[in-house]
Length: 377
Image (cartoon, rainbow, N blue to C red; front, top):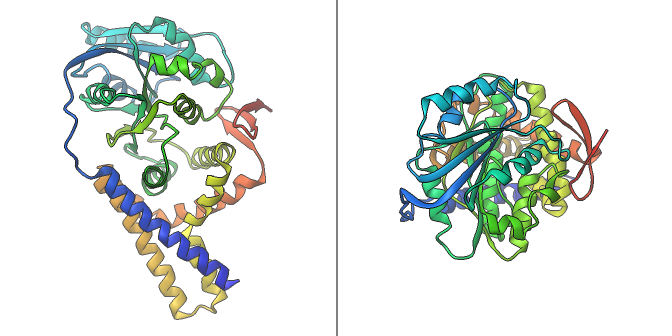
């Protein structure tokens, strides 16, 4: 028993070192592709659910871009959605911005984001399409960087890593830490060991040609992981899918602990459905859990305590390196101190993900099929 767990811990340590090297390689400074102020027209799709505490600054960041020409389409389901008043105010504040508020009342499938995108697409004037969640904040050069990526022949889709913004609750802090210590290192490791065939859904850009060649939005209507599916389908056409070392920011500062756990379990069960072998292999990343299993099995030996301490140190280095140096984030040391709790919760969620396929999304429950589709409960 102790030998098997020791082997798992050794593998987990190797993964942590791989993640560190991959983070350095992915985010290391390189001669930048010079962005340009003008170029191919861009249509930005912004599917919106409602008004959030940081909605103004997130939405405003897309109206102050240095790139031209571009069009921003805000999609809302109901005319009385509280965010509409903010959008009208922004339209008055930025009269020179090509901004349109589009009502998208139809329910075209179980994925509300894809449903909104399908209703926005006919209004897109340009052939370079950007999809960005409502809680994403970007820099003023964001569209210029996206356009620059498509100067490389054969590129069909690009997406960006992201960091979490300010956190006001325990759930939001754990979510931010999960992004920095787990998700972004795993994405960096993937860029080292495999060809990228997925996208990161916070913000994506693709050509209209790539979208149509991959089948469009309609086939994604009932998939939970629409970003994974879109990247996979674009890659299947032979076009290149890239992740750029340009960091954007997501903002959900008041996430509850329950919402965090539900989101992580939903992500885990979806990942297991989309990439079953990769998800099973992801189990070797849980270094802290394995070091703690060894501790009682060794009779609380001094060397076992040393393994726990070394594991905590390695995990701390990965988290701080990712958050502070790679993502340029500002998580407090208090939040970073939640890392042991987060790691143990992550191991428990990984185990729980094998106990069923039921997920909570919004106020509804679904089953995730083996191919990643949703079926209502």
